[in-house]
Image (cartoon, rainbow, N blue to C red; front, side, top):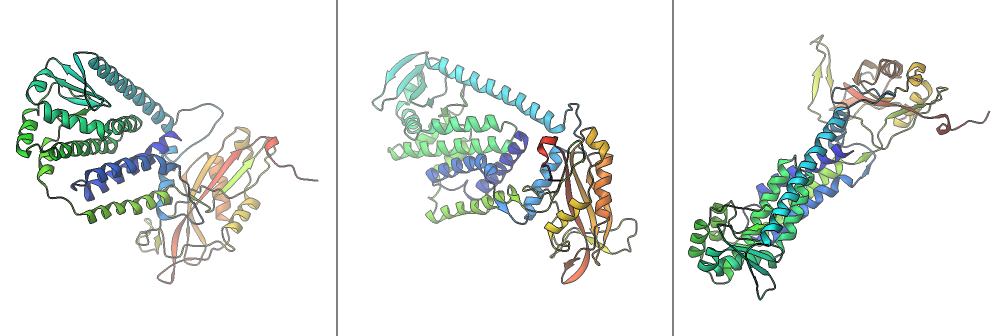
Length: 443
């Protein structure tokens, strides 16, 4: 689903941006930082597609599944009827696509304006192979692939420093980075982290170009004064590398900083646990989840599902008390050892298979969906209070609740070695299939 993927990419970008600001943004190894930023942005796009298979859902996996469930059904209720209906996710998708179209229009308009400007003024071929465009007026110097744009006054007064700076952008192929940034921000136009990472990479571009100028023997003080004089310009192109970039104070400070230790590059390894966390969050699990299917004759089957929405929280500190009776026993949301059905999850699936009946009225009206239940397994293993966390319809909810209330005793959950009452979460998916899809049994 597009919105789910967008959110996963967005969460990765937010995590990578925070990591960058905390560990690497003040370091002076600019080439390394540039590569690091490009890699993490590419990883954010790829990680949601990588699916690990886990036997048991990790806590972060469960939380991600809960988030997906809320996105599909934010109010806890989904009913799939024959008649089409708008969901919150559908509305969000439409709004996203509208924003995407507007962002593409803005992007194309910038490209058109840029190419129109390159057709103006006097042109010269430089020894490096780049084309120099000398433009009348107060145009801010910038480079774009193999084109350098400079206004007539700058060409007369400060050609060496400016041309060296812009040639460095060309030699370092910064325009390809900028093009990639443009595509990422188009795709993630709603996400501030995408724009912030884009700004950080552009800043690194300026650090690299400034370093190239100073390595040519230009006096630091004179160059800094030039930057200050050129700090105000009339036109800036987001798809180009601008000589007078906004964060002037940071650029001047970076020129005077001591070189960072090479060992500081090891800080980038902090991205490894973030990647591992993301892979866990997006993993598929083989936890229990009942799936009930039916055709017109109410045939039924139950099977395990690879991407389970079992939403049992694993924070051992979490605990709640029965609100109607504050003196009653504590009910934990999670414990060191969770309750277990006799024989394990497979036996729980078999029990559901033998006892759940697809409600005839629901099958007739093509009502299907996933009911998510929570129930208490007390310290004796007995199933207690049952509640519907996510509803589909009255008929399907009632059937799921009915069967759960008949479950035999579990092996109780344990905390610090003692049996305790625990909330247990169980999804039951009701799916309609045609007669042809239901395996026929031999008489």
